[in-house]
Length: 321
Image (cartoon, rainbow, N blue to C red):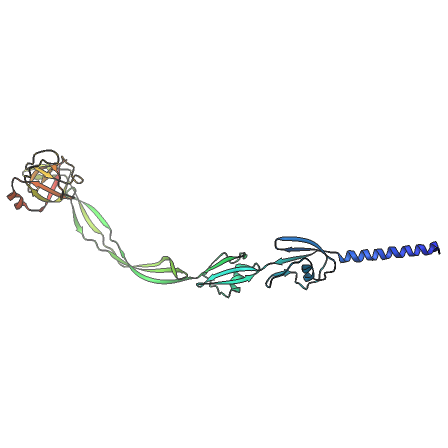
């Protein structure tokens, strides 16, 4: 049976209306959703999913016990919803000799320390910084800082003053005034990191006894009178002199031993130096000896008796050139 053209038009309009309604409903159900999780960004559509939990399940995203989701799981989905999954991870907080593990999503270090049940003092040092974000498997260290003040007494070393003495031979000295060390009492701030001393700082110092400088007179004259004649010299010094006699050997300079030849330490008096030795007379540094070291001399004598009579004595020695 043929349908009149009037009814055919009515049916056509009906079919078109139903199609439009279905299209609109399908479009409404196709809500675009963005999921950011595990380093990936997923662009998807929510056909039948009504909540954040539904869309995550549809995309096989499994949440751990302490993972966080924004917006909340029971939040209804809207067009262009952006879902961010933050995974929880392990962080170690080291403090007071122990290590405490916490599991959390990224938080600032200060919050992680609080989650570990650790109280911070104002002087404590924390690494990394309190406002930095935590990272997976990170170590956060809390260094306990403490201070104390101690008092100690310290020696103040006396100084040395030197003056010129025009009545004393050049090279010789005499003590005009003995020195005396002083004493101070210092207040010291001691800083400890986790109980170990790391710094000392003097914050106050009081002098209890002032030091007294030692005063030394330095000889300045280079000419003296000896045996009725003038003696010019470069410098004078006190030395310990012993005596020796013939051994059958020549001197270190190849000469036959004779009165007026003396053994010296060449590091102190070079060989060949002319000398005047009080109690002995004019001499020449011409020999060395195994026991002659430093301010020592060995004077040649004619015989053993003279050596024994001389013995060992301190003498004034004038270095002439």
